[in-house]
Length: 84
Image 1 (cartoon, helix red, strand yellow):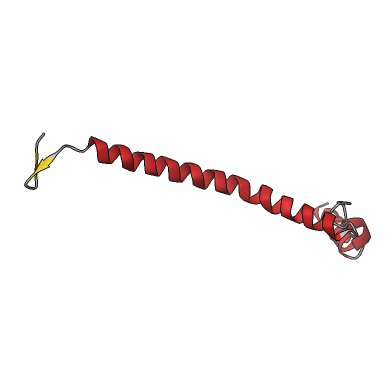
Image 2: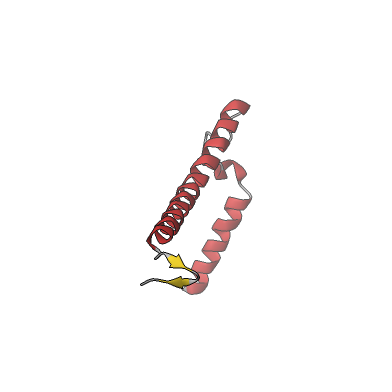
């Protein structure tokens, strides 16, 4: 049973590799108009980078805010000795 499934998957994989016309699922990706292809590529890059930029910005803001709060809440020091 497992051998049949493996063989069927191998045949399907070879069929997909050797039939590139059927592998082009997205009509926009392979548009003959270069402007459309470029717009699609730029949009894909933007949507890929957007979550990374938002996460990085949030991390940077939290870190900056924590440093600012830490700097304002430290006790005053006189001659290297802190008053507590």
